[in-house]
Length: 544
Image 1 (cartoon, rainbow, N blue to C red):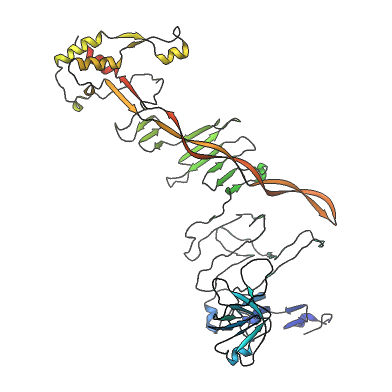
Image 2 (tube, rainbow, N blue to C red; image 1 turned 120 degrees about the vertical axis):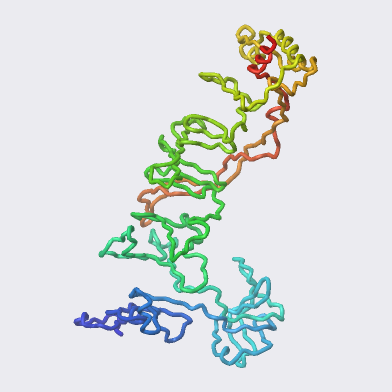
């Protein structure tokens, strides 16, 4: 043990410990285990002679179980203590509590002025600071009693209700180390760090292929048998909860350990932030390139420059670029102006439709329609006509009745030249094109006239539909937190020497669309007759 200013001649010959009072403790040559492998140890609530638990073997043969040989500069530990004493009852005054059963002599011996004492009142307890006690352990005096309601406001002294007991010296949280830095308006410093950890490595590079040569700057482990909550916790008024700078491999990595892996997800958010995940690469001008919103919506692609965006999907198990790809290109200043490409051998549109490289078809034969009675295609372009099933093995042939022949003759005489009304409205009567055919309702009436059931003849079609509605939305102006950037002055020695671009959040009014609960009629109920002309013509020809 030496004074702070003492010097040594030939200090290299020392091989024990040098302790300079109030300054430092040097272990010139660490060795073995426990205190010998540690330079300085701080222990709380573990015993007066508890050694540092470095390579903490309790028998020589245990060095065959633990593979590493540890050397520690600073060791800190805190065993969360038991409650010194607890009582079942108590009688209170403004500054004391008297027990129905006195404390033991050993408990009295351990009492200290300044200890905290909590009552067992529920749902809210009272607390006081110990100022003294009766030598026989029947009572304790306190500076005063205060209702522990969690409020930051000042509290008045009160007297607890009699009957409920107390807990003496009840520590509820234990810290091995609590490091804090304070910077106030009078501080000259322009930066502050609560705890700095570093590794100086001049021997080897970590090998990610073999996962060897480990150097960890921060190692959070569990030593007990019970599951702990959080290995890293950020609380309070920070703009960023975690930041990675300069990592040459990955900014964040998750691995299995001893057959254990996260049961839910590597990343789990219960925050109410509008954006749950946000990528804003510096190389893209800090503009968003990928985002996941709290409602599950996803945004992909650069907004600083035009670029093709792809979503590659792998399903074959082969090491190829993609098995299926969704890509987007182009676009304008109008929403929906880009082009989307689906690259795959086959695309299933559930339920029931499949797009293949040379066809668009239903997934089950003869089960789906193309269009609806109230939502028809205006024109179908094709290089050849449609092919209808006519295989003799699929049909049961019947004789054509005389009433059907008579109806066919009458229908043949009803063929007319006509114009579609919507074409007249759009183009005018002098421009609307001529068509030739029949009126479906007239065909229906002729069949009925000849004693035939119109519903039995497939060339006559009839469909109807009910009213269709859609939700009504309205624009609502709300105020919420949004992200942005601002120039922050850099002050040194009280003078501004420049600015720096920083991320900020601020409250702003934004417009959102919300459903009003009302609905709008988009299509009235209606009905529509139609004709399958190839079958009607066959019906008429049967009479010729």
